[in-house]
Amino acid sequence: MDVNKIRNIAIIAHVDHGKTTLVDKLLHAGHLFKAHEKPGELIMDSNELEKERGITILAKNISVRYKDFKINIIDTPGHSDFGGEVERVLNMADGCLLLVDAFEGPMPQTRFVLQKAIELGLKPIVVINKVDKKNCSPDKVHEEVFELMYSLDATENQLDFPTYYGSAKLGWMSLDWNKPTTDITALLDGIIKHIPPPKIEEGSTQMLITSLEFSSYIGRVAIGRVHRGSVKALQNVVLIKRNEGAVIKSKIKELYVFEGFEKLKTEQVNAGDICGMVGLEGFEIGDTLADPAKPEAMHSIDIDEPTMSMLFTINNSPFYGQEGKFVTSRHIKDRLMRELEKNLAMRLGETDSADSFLVFGRGVLHLSILIETMRREGYELQIGQPQVIFKNIDGVKCEPIEELNINLPEEYAGKAIEAVSTRRGEMTNMEPKGDRMDLKFLIPSRGIIGLRNYLLNVTAGEAVVNHRYKEYQPFKGEIQGRINGALISMEMGESIPYSLHNLQDRGKFFIEPGSNVYQGQVIGEHIRSGDLMINVTKTKKLTNIRAAGSDEKMKIAPATKLTLEEALEYIQSDEYVEVTPKSIRLRKIFLNEVDRKRERNKVSVR
Image 1 (spheres, rainbow, N blue to C red):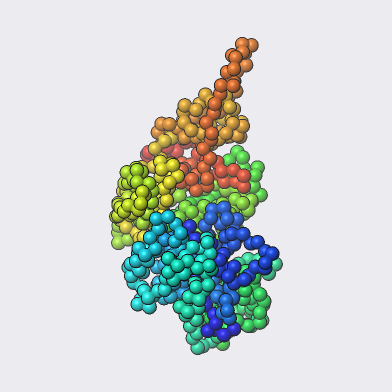
Image 2 (cartoon, rainbow, N blue to C red):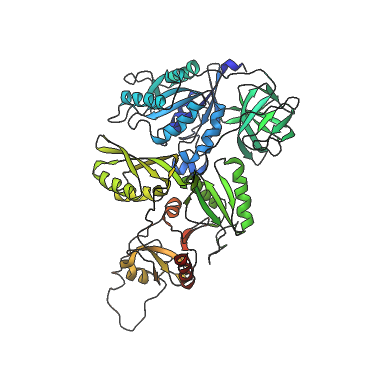
């Protein structure tokens, strides 16, 4: 295909600003579906977890034909925890669509992804979405976007960006938000007009592998944009390894291009187009595919370092192996090694035990998505408390600091400020937006663990919390952990309604009547600061005297069900989250009270 008829664009936006909905409309505009087909909404979020959570986790490639142009669209994650995905796929684009909510304006993670695009020299088109929202201010948001780009050192060409207004949900885009249209063709015309065609350099074949897919039919598929020359099916090539620069001979067995959702087999792909190839042995993301006669490596992908770690270990609880298929340390290690191949922001470290692994990532969400995926695949494992990664910089102990943005009803602003302050946060800005307040802070990454859940509880679910990694700064001091102690099961057995009813005044429970529990399992939160051992398996003593209606009067409060992220943020350093395909349980690392006392004494001596 004529390279001047190709446009490679990445769509970048903050979580929940309508990015995936806009991609849906672009797909419909490209007539990818027949009249009888009803693809539904959020078509690109094909992953089960993406559909459930309403966020994009994995970057994906599709293409749309419009007029006689081919537009390759790269859908990118909006959350900074998936920055590894963003940074590698932006290498394939020549321009980007920056999608911004007409009410909220640019948010912290908009800045994160946009910064990467600006550094790569991508030409932006700004799309101010949701102009049908009540109390929105599109003109003000336009100014905020300009100021944001200026602060990110955008070039004059990048600052001269075209702006389109509209509603992806209602399916229209226009150059003037006061003049709605009937479709999004104005935006498609803008992509063709403003996004430059791929730049082509002279020289031998070069392609940077920026993504991979796995198919049970054809195996591993290497995906990237041909930078120089061309690639052909059955062509002999070399792989230049990302880290050590080793050169390995290989061969392309099959070649594919993206057409709509499909990968179509082809014989040749020229520079500028995005393709997938099968048959390359032992490739990794960041490797360069080159001509054997003149192997030249491309600049590899730079990924920000992880800021958080979690301990992954085998499940050794009394309920071990009852619900999962993959339970051994070998199973867990093999699965983590496979994840390393495609998850560039993740690292794997060894521990003193062959049954435990240190997994490093960008945040609790980044690692919890991996844990949830493993759980659904049939794995059983236990996870330790998330720990931030400290660094020694010029002899000073430093920790990761994040920019935190909290949007919440005005009456709750005081509670939010107090909560962040106790976690060593510093306020940088406070701005009213209608009947809500926009608060900005700098806070240690440690302080964010558990903060979202607290704010959602005190604001009845009204708080919108966003954060992004900024930099390492000197250690800010100790932060108080969980104030309330744990309710710990004394016995193994089934929880009895009679016991739960009588123990309700001791705290709130995480289990329901009839739940199987074991000794050392954390089954609730104590109302006081210390841990408390309780017996929830105790049955009512039977007598020949019947108290009329006593059983009917029993009222047990509903159990508090923690999600995986909430459980990870809740636990302390002496606790694990036990994860199986069917259950999420909390437990003490040492199930026996005697062992726990011995460990506490060791810590106090140290």
